[in-house]
Image 1 (spheres, one colour):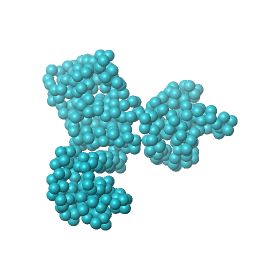
Image 2 (image 1 turned 180 degrees about the vertical axis):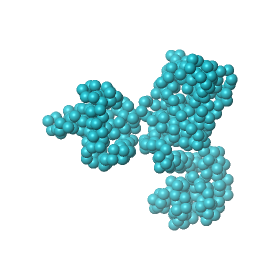
Image 3 (image 1 turned 45 degrees about the horizontal axis):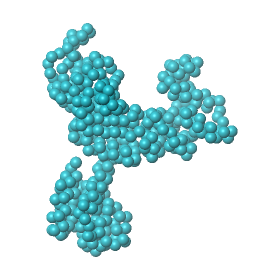
Image 4 (image 1 turned 45 degrees about the vertical axis):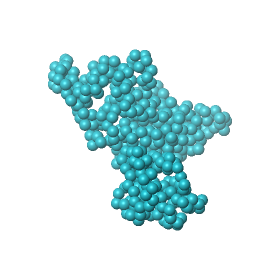
Length: 447
């Protein structure tokens, strides 16, 4: 991971004891006896963690910490001190020390705190990288402070530079493609193309043609040579989405391509070398598919070099307020509205709702609510009926009455929800033509 640790200690015995242990953890370790020399080094080069055994007066320890934080605010600092008073520890923690460890200490305890500091630092660097992607408008952020999403980000940071195959697992709507695109942008292939294809959306012949291409006259209508995705995105990253839906014959062809790093075009005999990174995504339990005989065990092992599992939204409800604010910002800008927040009642409903469609469903609900909202807050009446029914049942005769225009608008969006956004089907159910439905939706959006 390239983690750099700076040790400041003027006791040779202590240094000889600590350095081999830290190096065994895989860190690059540099040590200095003099604190001023160490601060100069910190100004010249970036370090992830500083371990400072100062054996100085408390005020000098705090002063060192302050200078280190000024020089490199992102570096985590662990103070080891013989001045183990509560006041000194409190002062150090207030100034941003990762930990204050009094002497005497166990070497295993110090190593544990270094590991935790490294974990925080890696997460911080990952967040900074994701923020840069958002600033560059390359990707939406991977939102979430929950433990599950912290693990996802750590796993991504760990595997992105390694150029190995990754299997991304999770229910529909959890953000598997977003994770795969982010891995690509954090990898050594970031300057090359990323391409995603749904393996379940094609029959085997069409999928083989898309992935591997074809030779001239390979079949009726093949008038020339066509390069497939494996060739056309050379050096880039390919996401095979819904990999569990791939036919048995295609699984065999894919396994061969992964093992040999070569492909044969449809209708051809020549092996063509290919260079790309494969990511795969699925919402299926592939282990169960293997037992049923519908998925190859050897392909599973080839794809599952490293696995990242995205938790469903119902298991990380603490992230829902973050998603709400993000989607409010996105769609308020898109529809040129000034919707600033969701009401307390709406947030309560969201926190209780299981969101079977996960983040994608929440995004759809927020987008719809902003279209319906004429004020600054998303209220219960702006939600789909599946949310409103529960609250209206609780409200009884005191539930808010809505205007006829609001009822029409809510009903139109309820119908669109039911038909999954199919405007032709919605217009048919509503008894209006598509042009009328389009005008109504446009008027709601301009709201």
